[in-house]
Image 1: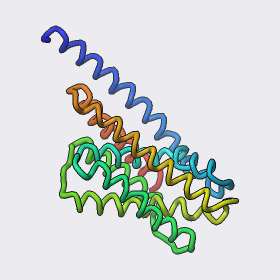
Image 2 (image 1 turned 135 degrees about the horizontal axis):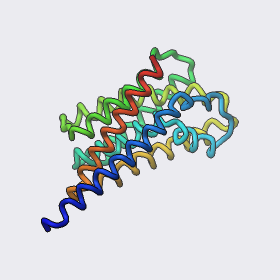
Image 3 (image 1 turned 90 degrees about the horizontal axis):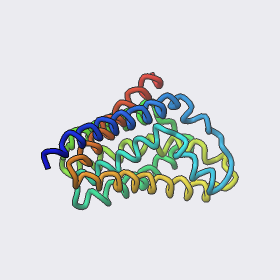
Image 4 (image 1 turned 45 degrees about the horizontal axis):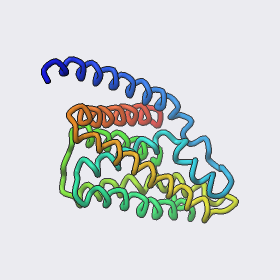
Amino acid sequence: MLAREPDEGILAMNLHKLLLTALLLLAAAGAHAHQATGVTGGFVSGFVHPILGWDHVAAMVAVGLWGAVLGGSAIWLLPVVFPLVMAFGGALGVMGIPLPSVEIGIAVSALVLGTMVLFSARPPLWIAALLVGVFAIFHGHAHGTELPDAVNPLAFSIGFVLATGLLHLCGILISLLSRWRLGRALVRAGGAIIALAGTLFLLRAL
C-alpha cells in the first residue's frame, strides 16, 4: 500500500494540471459565451445553447457537484431548484423585465459555487438552495432574453432545461469519485478550477 502512494500523488498532480489547462482554455472562450444571442431554432438550439456558454456550463456542473458533496436530499434538491427558478428568470427575460448585471451575476455564480465545492462547504440546506436559486435567476434571464427570437420558444425552452439537467447530472457523476481519496482530491480540484474560471469570467464582465 505504501508503494502506491507516490504513484497516486503523481497521477493526482497530472490530472490537476490537465483539468486546469482544460478549464483555462474554456475560460478563455468565456468572452464568446453569449454570442449566440438571438439564436433561432427549436429544441436543438435550446439544447446546445447552455452547453456552448462556458460560464453556464461551469455553474451548472458546480451545482451538481455541490449537491453531491452536501449529500442527502441536496443531491436532488439543488439540481431541481436551479432549473425551476431558472424558468422564473427566463420568464422575466421574455417579458423584457430588466435585471441588472446579468453577466456579472452569472460569473459570480461560477466563482461562488466552485468555491463551495473546493472547501466542501456545508451550510444548512435551505441556505444552499437559496444561493443556487438566486444564481439561477441570472442564468434564466440570460436565456429568456433570447426566447422571443426562437422559431419555437417552447421547444427551445425544453431543450435548454434538459441540457441544464444533464450538466447537473455530470457534476453529480463526477462527485461520485469522492468515495476514493484520489477522487476527493479531483472533486476539490474541479471546484477550484470552476472558481478560477468564474474569476476570469467576472474580470471579462466588469
